[in-house]
Image (cartoon, rainbow, N blue to C red; front, side, top):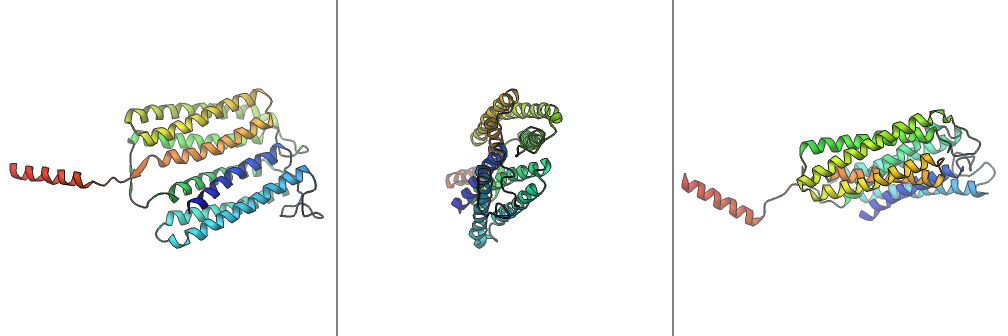
Length: 302
């Protein structure tokens, strides 16, 4: 099951990458048909743009197979592991919806809102797939919080900041020059206000993560600390890439890197949230004996 879970996670991440390549290479309308066939008179790709677009569609089909495998593998555990059962179906349903949105994207001539929804759903599926990977390797059982209430609240605030930053990033990209086709023009007048708001959110996210790191180190929560460090490293690189791309006329390579880092950050944030809990600790035999001895001594003293 772990292999199938990893296939879904890697597949969704690669789909973000290929989707970015489609957009940044102006291949969004490389295939004029909204279905599997590239065009009304040709099933297969006939030039570079159509090849890139059709390859992205083909990857979507492969990802659909991976999600079906997830449902099949989890079938026998559907009653004992309802969490895995729900994850598998969400992944499968998400891939189906992604395909439908992709078709609508072509029909609407790369409408910015539809394209943005496409990426947003991909980001959500990356998060679900990450959770699926984590849970597939976990022994079922009760879990308890391992960090202080204040740190838990800050963790959720940080997660919300990331979610808003991703959405604002989609708006920012939607008003930028990379529409997905050379003949599709965007209203770039809103790009500058959006990019500033997006940047402020990114800086706020960085500050919140640093506060979390300091708190985690102070409370000596090793697993949680490592998760925070991982997110901080990726967000720091993300901020640097974002600043450079904004000041260098948005080169496609940097824009694509920024998109991939956003998806990776979502995955790592799911790991971070999961690290706020751990399996309920059960007493060892030696600890139970010590407890019994203490109880006996207290009884004798009484």
